[in-house]
Length: 235
Image 1: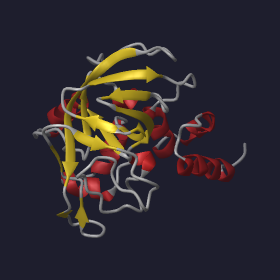
Image 2: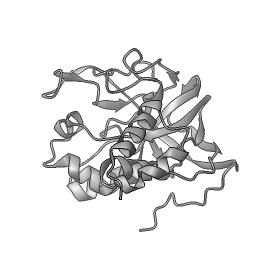
Image 3: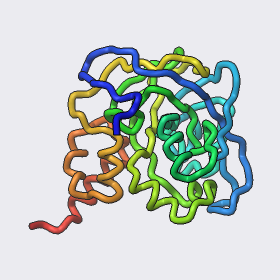
Image 4: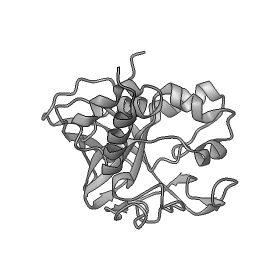
């Protein structure tokens, strides 16, 4: 399928890439999963939203002002400061699920247009508003996501689709708002994208060796790659 955001990426070349169509933040709300509350219910907000590196996981929460994260042991922190998802992919899910999915429905902070979020190379830097962001890792679906959407067998279905969206770290604090351009300032030469990392961690472990060449992955992910490769049976 040819998507409207399909484009050629060249390492080190600056280009206009897309648009931020919604900035979404969530308040703490009850949910029948884990600790009983979550901030996954993200809703669009108007005007500029401050964005900054929140601190290490377990200490820092979301990178967006006013955005709540309940499970800070597993979500948020510097390497998962911001979650982005493509509006085009939400539209495809709308058709497949037969229900409306407003921006923020997947718990994403940034809903983009004309941005191949899941095809972004790990370590890409994006200028959005006055902030500078860096693609760090894919979103791995969890039970809270499944409970929130209320779709049967949602985790395996989402996994099979391989359009996970991307977590971003904040390299430069700033403000973002709907309508801002999303510009790619740099693309690492290793070429390993979000979709490949997602597949390696979920259904295609044979791809794990590729991840050893990606220094921009979060340290916990790189450590997990090392452990899994050590445990893999030798031919």
